[in-house]
Image (tube, rainbow, N blue to C red; front, top):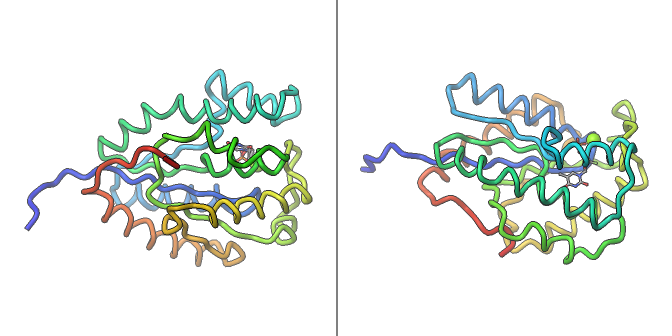
Length: 217
Ligand code: FDM
Ligand code: MG
């Protein structure tokens, strides 16, 4: 029998287009794990609290214009600046639930016409998620959910392209088994049940494995 009690935390990532229920489900999972006594933390990208994040916020709220490549690199830098903290949490046994990451980074930027492989470069080497919970919803359905907001990118035609780019990214991913694609049209409760099952399994099984570094390497 294994007498070791040490377990690292799991890196559970939520990805998908706008209005697919990512934040709702990520928060529900966070509350569930907290109540069950897990050490858990919630992280959202972009992290708008840092100086880089504040520039990203100004861009997203249409208060600042930036070259497509420049803003792409800022989104990426915003992840890199969080790596030391995230790494320490995971090594310390805390599970992190992350709302968006490099997959959004590449999908949104490439959907503007930037080269997909160029877009991946700046995120190579980041921590790897243990699972990607991909909330999949047709753009018609997401639009029905009270409509898109006022931020840059929150437009039906653009979201349509982003959804296709996400699909392409999954198809090209060597780590295809990381992806759990969920039909986001299901009820909040039904989705939550599936996400809890997936997450408990990941938390249980990744604990003894070393931290996964080197995204897309
Ligand atoms: N977004 C998010 C990007 O374009 N690149 C990135 O690297 C990340 C993390 O920012 F439209 C886009 C996706 C979305 C916007 O995200 C803000 P939220 O989750 O809707 O706040
Ligand atoms: Mg949004």
